[in-house]
Image 1 (tube, rainbow, N blue to C red):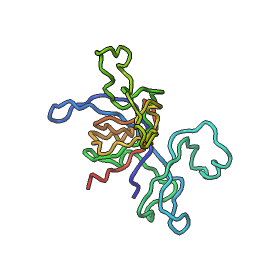
Image 2: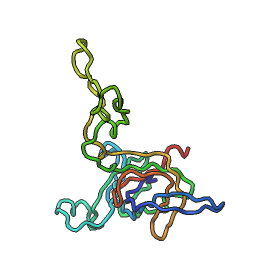
Image 3: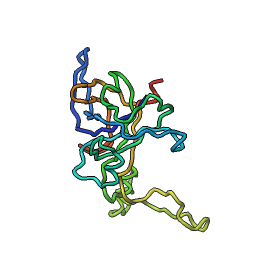
Image 4: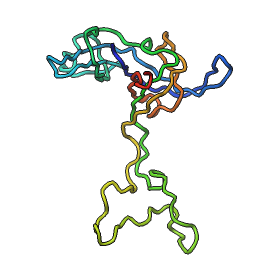
Length: 207
């Protein structure tokens, strides 16, 4: 059975539960996706299903040959599976894969923040505002380690490129599913900006 799907983040809104409680939710468009390839242990060394999502304006001939008239998909992603005996090429995957109250894991590319200092990037407190340190409020402080080892250690938290990296948030709850529009309303924050590509998988925390 396929355990994941490709989608995109549409934005945030709020809904009311049956008990009258307001829930902040992120709206995700999930699919519809098409199975374009099934990989087996005998042929490929592992078992997985490759899904296609979105409409591409133009594709190379090689990719068109790979898709075999299944559609011109903009995005292709693989999902590892334990068993692919019941997965067929051309099968459709949509929001019916998930149920209300189910937990999911969402993977996306976080928003890029450019070059950021240590206060913003790592939450450093900065230097004191008194004792003559008029220009050290957001400075990182000392990074040296004296004579031994006499160098800056790898992994030292410094200023640098912030965001724009793959992030997975696990255990998000599906508040509501809309099968007609292929939408999931998920409680919690989802990485990425609006219309950003995301991968949604069934969470192992369901067990």
